[in-house]
Length: 524
Image (cartoon, rainbow, N blue to C red; front, side, top):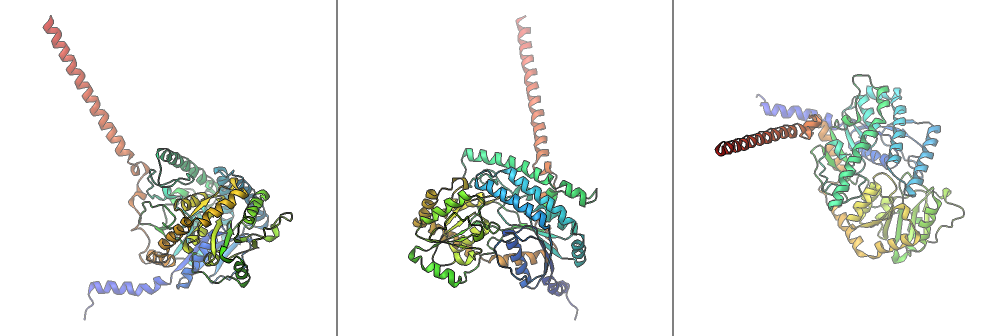
């Protein structure tokens, strides 16, 4: 019996399906800390669901200071920047921390950081042995950390279709083509919410202009790297590469972020690192038990910051904790604690802590955090209020959103004083509205139709099975900038209006001339 045409097509698809389910995927990560934690989680999810995964990793000893080493279930191709440069970079990072803690964080610090990333990128693109190996592997798809522009250059060099994963908010929305009406979508570094008055909208418009200039300066830092590693005539630009991914995935959730318009090729799957809590160690459980009904406070200022380089700031925090009835579990490198400063009686210092498990403990009362998005997502997941101390990057924007959602308060680091710190912690813990808001956001996050790991897997496999994300990308990506912003239409209409006004004015002038001319003839 002959097979119908429709059945034949279905048979072909089904025959291909097992192959597509076991794709070869390369993940790319060149930054440590929370960036590595997210890319590692993505790699594990894909590996555990049958895909052949390898990570291209820039390794450094300070990627996750204090964290016990863990065995990777997937293979890793790694390289090091060299001990001499790593030490130099660590000194730069510490100097930047001092600026952040003193309230001197600005765009200059950010551009200096990007300058270091461009230098590192040059070293990365010289890893010819790894590049040759990865090209021979013929990967079906790559997933890159889109924060680092070098990731785009590496995947372009390898010639692999890719998904861009952004570890934070929609900070690059404009260059991705995501609509961002300035009347209610706050720009990066504006510290605004979605509810703006006139001056807020004015500030947001100015922030948009400044961001556009900063983006151009940031891209220019990689021009020399591009010139060295790509042949003339086929040199990409960072801006063009932002339009090339098959899909954009953002590590954000609208339990934190403000509502805004998105495109079909933009998906959000915030909360990859959130998990049901596991029991904490017996040692910590005994310490927590001593707190009674007061409970305890979790303190961590980021996966890459194990100690604070400004002793005065550290002293104010420590003195603030001493005024609290709660126990405090603080991730801090004990070997870096100043000898002349006594640790507060209710504080336990630990080199590393399982933040997710501690926040899920029934006696957790507050998270004191730098405002990293992963930390905030875990606080939302477990319904724990937050006190934010934003240090750098998108952290100030993250804590603005937490405060706007009424689940916490933030203190700029330059305003850190023990009395103010203690009073703010008491206010958050004792005022039930912060806990109620945190539980509300937790319900929003937990009640999504699909958990983030299933969303990630589903979208990655959709891109593989559909042969790319061309059907999701808007045609605006192919339009010249003047057509995208309708400048040609505006120019045409302006000319038409000008011509019409010119004709009307001249007709009126002729009529007036004729009217006065006839009047003079009658008078004569």
